[in-house]
Length: 213
Image 1 (tube, rainbow, N blue to C red):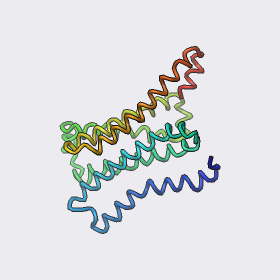
Image 2: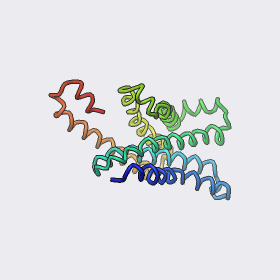
Image 3: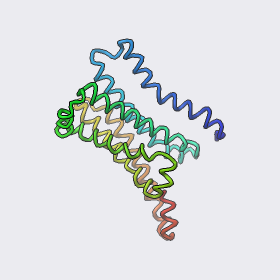
Image 4: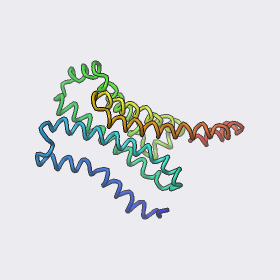
């Protein structure tokens, strides 16, 4: 297992730089006319795709930690989650600014009339309280409610996949891959939950609640 100093000074900075790499490449290509004939569509697609990819990576941390028994992996989850919000915000800003030019009337029409925008907007709104309560202080303040609140990530990832699936319409190969990964990640959690229940059945309520965290 890596030491505390290795995690802090090597692994975390490396993951941070890797998570920033997509936006660095996007900015470089944008400054050098490398985003194709429709740069706004390309920016929208890439920021959305990386939001979903990082969300899946974040959700994979816990299963990977349990399978490999590498507990240090959990220390990357918060940073990865905040990068999810970062790319989701860029995706949203690209839509309301570069695509719609802050025309709130058209934006509201889109949210109401286009299902893929409706679920995408819902997913972004649900991400806001998760990002806002990501600090240690909020964890201590909210206690059990923090755990319950952050379970919204499961709904968010489902909405994110639906958003992408309904957007592409014809070629669903990429969103189908994401859907399969989500099914595996959520299926793993359900399996662990139901396997744990028989052991917890005879425990006092307080101990059972602690183990569920």
